[in-house]
Length: 299
Image (cartoon, rainbow, N blue to C red; front, top):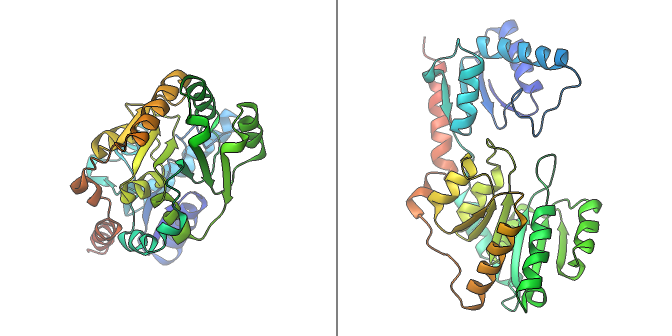
């Protein structure tokens, strides 16, 4: 059984099936379970202790464990000493080259070379907010003539009303273009037709799936991320990226100004580390998952 989470109920279902039918199962973590404070909240210490016990039971009975980054692996090894280093394998998020190739065929219809387009793909939740970027853009617009007239800030996915109000408060109502949910190919085409892709992560462990699809496009990335976290390390290795601390509006404003000036001069960072990006090809990652499943079937 291949089981991936969240939702973490998936692990409990796999555990129950294993006990009933003696079928091995692999636990694939997309996000940490108990130890992800940005996403998972517990009403009382009892609730957290109960979740810890459930996770402990699942890990003990599982036949394989995969996680998306080293930080997540280290957390599991720290809290569950019965696990060894070899028990947990890192298989990161990735991108599908065929998705990129299909989107390239329609990307031109989304381009607007007259606009400095910054695009965010996805949704916002606890720990991830567009407010620091909006405040940073407001600062940048006051310091850099022409930025506000040229800027187009696109959101694909759900943009909550509170953030639309925040954009209005920052004086950016005319610059916001909420696209809502789009078919996947159109969403990627819009990324390819953008000048800068931005993402934000407030915790030291997060590296969301959108980051890897961003890498696959080869576009310039603005990362509002902790420099010591996995997202910061990946963007540094990627090359064509500018980063700033996620809540430092002064640093964000300066990054926006630098990117805008580069756009005007036709010199946005494009020094993509192609061999590094190719390591996130989902065809390669799927081979590793298949290898883990094969190991589980050995007598």
